[in-house]
Length: 254
Image 1: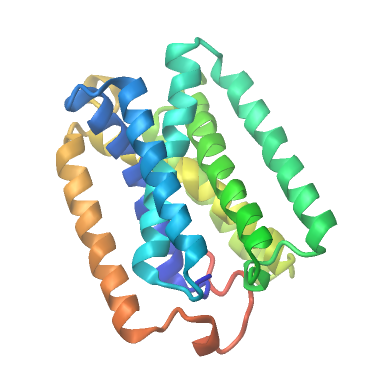
Image 2 (image 1 turned 90 degrees about the vertical axis):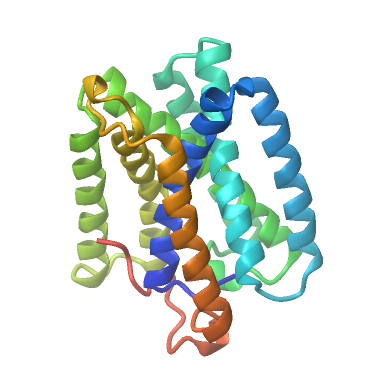
């Protein structure tokens, strides 16, 4: 696992936005359709996770590739449930929230910790990636529910989620909120934050977006992710053994 630095949060937010826009690009712009897009993405995720479990150390390019793919996958899971099966967003958000809570409780009961700095066994890593997948699916449902169904709009949704992350940051640094709790709270909220950002940038102007297009947003965000991952690979500043302290929230985004 990587050290939790400002780079971690920057790439995480970029990846969550790409998860939203890339799913839309493959599904609608390229016309793959939800089913075909889901099959391709899930296959990529399975192959990537197999590679991740096979390596013995943190590789930035592999780790962040999986985060991008799992972000797209989480988006597609929610989209399939709402668009193909007609499940209401309120129901999907509730189900994913409960499922994530069950994973956290089970993980803690089995391993006695939820810290990502303790992930040094395949079982703990399996819990970690399952939790990550559910955070993306939950974030997609919650973000869409607030922005669209509750009529808050993409801009105000972005402000809301950014404010929530600010509250988490303040609570951690000023009110001594537990680092592991703060990390997972921020991780969950960055998903709807990224989804709202992606929708704001790509959706038509009459829907409250900026209509920049999914192709442009994907290209720019992917380029920034590649640059940041390249920097981390070269400098190794996010390797745990390089960190000055092993807090799970070295720097919560604000």
